[in-house]
Length: 208
Length: 262
View 1 (cartoon, each protein chain N blue to C red):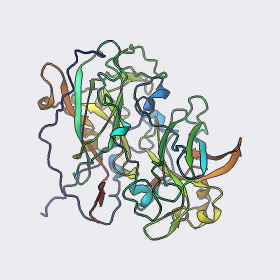
View 2: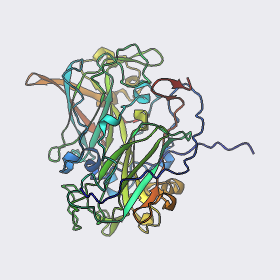
View 3: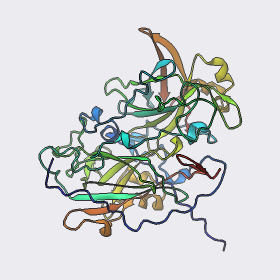
View 4: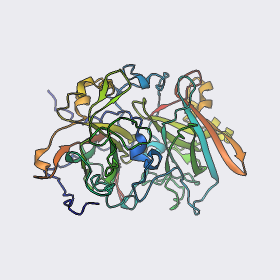
């Protein structure tokens, strides 16, 4: 017998449940407890980059918006660098941008919004340029293991067409499920997205 | 705030030394999905309309996945890991006082340092402080039910609270959740992001819970059940439960000022 491989096993995931707000965004549960809170606003006045709003819904198998879902986003800064020591790319770090935000959907409309900046293009380890994108993680009652997906930008057609991850998506018609569409409202740039958990337009989710 | 409450003691005892992680070129061990609940688990009815039906697209770890948000002590307040005090208005919360402690490890056995752990729970009667919870058990005026902690440089965390109560829910007509605490853990990278629940040793509701039994692997289920840790209990004050959390294995681990395994 060879020696055993003594790796541990990952802890099993469990649903975040209906009351995920209590722990992660207590103000939405109806009370104030922490001195400092995390939020859906990723920018400060000093953050570099184009201000954008990401706005969308997560729809279930009947096409109804989830009104108790929690999303987190993680993204590079305007120069294409993640605020983390493992990103050793050429982009410059922006001390005023952590790159992470969390939002619950509105209890009535199901709308989820983030105030952030448009990320720059990053370079992957094969040296390929990747289209600007935002990484998204989704948890809710009924979601047994958090779902990973990405949002790309509709005004980056050339970059999207060359993106190494988008090009992995087959059939190609599903690539559009990852694209947020650019619009303007009251002078502000708003990218709208829809995440479909099921159905003909089911969003592409990733095993990362 | 109750001035009589004793200070929260550090219950760390006999922590094992971490193993040396393997060397590699970065990225993560592949996730073993056979130990996680499947997305579509009809006995947990809420999953039926909320589970993707297409295959997940497998991605090699890229810089988007091996990075993740970095948190520090500036993000936390001094009472964040003390659920007995962090919402107390005019006395202590009702219930059995407990300490929950353990380590956040990765699959190589190495502690995950300086990572954010968040937790939330019902009160001793099984009622959440949430405007959507209408269960008949009373709200406890001195209990918020949430907290958070950063792990130390060995991956160790602890907090104190009261033991949550079980409660009924609308799955089957007579479904009850075992007593549990929700955990949200970041790890050092976005690919390690995990939400799970901790259960209590000896709870007879564990084997009949429609959510817990979505886990197909008996050993994986058992690893969510925290044993009573009498050694870490505080005499005449609190019982203790030990709960270790294991995140994805990393082929290389980055520290603040140096890289290992590269």
